Image 1 (tube, rainbow, N blue to C red):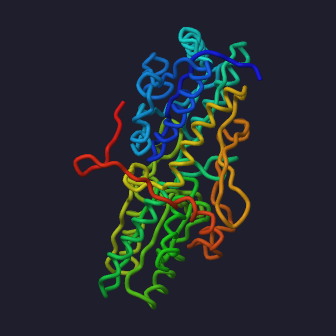
Image 2 (cartoon, rainbow, N blue to C red):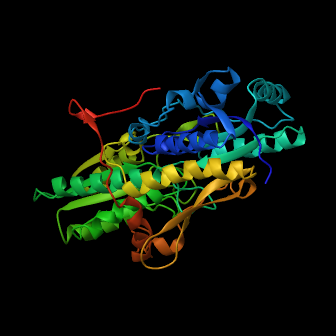
Image 3 (tube, rainbow, N blue to C red):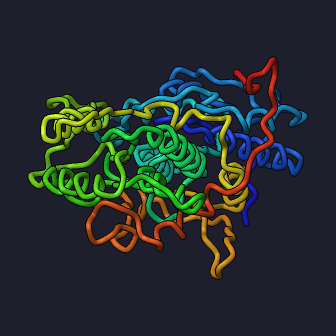
Length: 410
């Protein structure tokens, strides 16, 4: 192993999660250990991801957390403490000036380690940057550090941030179920959950079945074609058993022609993704018109990824380990890789940290497999529940200040 000495930089990109700062804490912990070994001198944090780095907006994280005393608080702080961005990096051939500017900054600050915490599009940045450094003979070890509540990254059993979001969704659905069950009138409650192309988070709505035996009556994921007639028929059938019907739907459910139920025209975001708005609300109007009963829709929205008061202990522990592991594999000479979580064999849940070539991961989407979705396409199987259940286990001893969770602001 060649020891590469220099400085490092870490950034956060894409949508925040309740665990992304736990991963950042892991990178900081790893860098502090590497500093003791004389490998990494300074770990810089880029403000607002690659956008801020291009403007040299950075913070010295080794100085800010030199004694590590506040890292526990950082780990319970939701959202991206360094700020985030949604910059889509073009290829080096299409945008040579940006890459030349990046190389100038690397050399100016003697950056030899680059850690990027993000999802699919962030891993694309990792792939492009590692290839550019290699082709320009600049020794830079680039490691992608996963995060996404969507749980849709390839090559990893699950992603940091998903377990805490799933715990929030499952808890909230269980509480909503208690509320809607108090009346005798027929009523339908539709809960819209994040997930454009992958239904992992919506699938977690089924987890209350393991705690009390009750769960949403119907669950619809984007992995299966959505059929309005099936929804109406299933609601009517459920009414035969009880008057309150609870439905969980992914924001990304699509009709047979590929149209999103919640599509709001043809607007797209910076990455070319169709902007979605209101699958739950659209279904509320349809069900009310067809069945004439009381119908309400609820969009969980940002709290799914910002609920730092309801963290999964498993998620936070693994998020820190993934961040520390990123520094370790980079120091050992790996580049152009993304950190992964490997599930152990056996009935009792265990996991370890690994890494995989970024070329296997960038721009790939891992959806919920068929064996986790029931034959009617409106529920989750026992195999799906077994996969999900360990990821929400454990609680974090959240530190409170004046009655509210304490957060770190950088």
